[in-house]
Image 1 (spheres, helix red, strand yellow):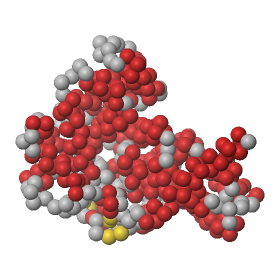
Image 2 (tube, rainbow, N blue to C red):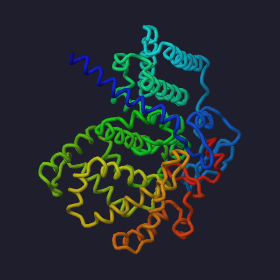
Image 3 (spheres, rainbow, N blue to C red):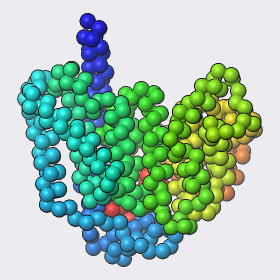
Amino acid sequence: MLGFLKTLIFFAVCHRIGGAMLPRLDSEPHLVQDSSRTLSDLDHQVVPSNAVDKYEYGIALDGSFEKKAEGEIEVGNGSMAKNYQTDPLDPKTKAEFSQLANQVESLRGSLKKQHGRSSEESRVIWKSLQMKLTEFKVSQKEHPDPTKAELQLDFLKSLFSLASEIGSFRMVPSHDIEDSKIFQPNFILEMVEFHMDLLFLKRGPRFFDSPDSVIPQEEFMRNGLAFKHFHEFIRFLPEEDKKKLVYMALRSTLLHMPECFPQENQLGHVTPTIRQLFLPTGFLQQADRLTANVKLTGALDMDRRGDDFEAVHLISYLINYFRFPSSEGAQKRIELQTVFYMLEFFEDYYKPLMEGIFASREDRPLFEAQLQFMRGYLKYFRNRDQYPKNFYTQSSILFSYMAHSPALQYRALRPWVEEFILRTFEHDSWFKFPLSYPATPEEKFTIWMGKVSDQKAFLLS
């Protein structure tokens, strides 16, 4: 009886995930500036990583997208390098992925006809498709292959889309859902990580300013068009798993950043420092223990030293950097945003630890204002193609009011914006003309705030 109740509860949770998923995914309109676009449209507008077009569009030193000479891009420090390209796929590999795509579609059709009853053949195919996804992940980890990244990414998306339908329409019995790895939180986290790894393989140095790039933020992963196939899986994850999700996305971003910017003067000193403190195995457990101790004792001993205190050292370093961002490094806008997303992560999931650190400081009010400003600024400007129409409200321009406000709580914010934010993003039109600024920005930016001077070229990049 207990086992039967557990099965019913599990099916209800999975159905809640899947049932909420398809109606929302089908009804959520997304902006492509002034037009509507779906995830499949985005995929078809992106030039395959192994294609060689007559022109390639690279990221300029100032972060803007401009047409470059054939086969060349500007890599961030003014020097030119060959664009990130891959060898064409061999016919055998193409045939394999074509067969997998046919299997997914065939299984979808079969399950629809079976009206909630799955045959043994369907169960075998469904299980084998999930195993194939795991095989791809293991293979890419052991022997990274950029030539297969795009097709593996397409397969991942199609399989999670099918899982959405299975959960939504009860296309299989509850025990089959219970046996499906794809509905389990750990597998979802692994596949989100795999999605990011494949994007880095597919895009190479262009990852941060590509139209399908992602940012390590829960809000984006729940709403961003590039993560549409994950939306409801993420929305219904337990809070602890959401924390692991954002941590994993931050970790993946930091792991791959040196690959995207390998030259000496592309990154400043901040990236090596935070990588050294954040990437070691066990960091999350250390932060959990420290937070639990603060909750228990009500205080944090800032004079304490040792390896188990590195989370405190990292957070303190991030706060100081955010207060006074460095002007060195050609990719300082990406580094500053990475610091912001890390601080947002700690603020959202390690509030007691943050409070313990600020107990010995006097700049908590300014930090909160800076964090609120940055949330609003980035949300307003970064790639609006990625978000649903109802994502933006009348208060979206609040960040501009904060930067110009004479109110006491914002008085120290304006010098920080003028000295660091305007310089880092090389973007001051909103600051110069605050009263005449539109509800929808006229400028176009990538999801990592790179300037887009040619929208068509960006979408085709």
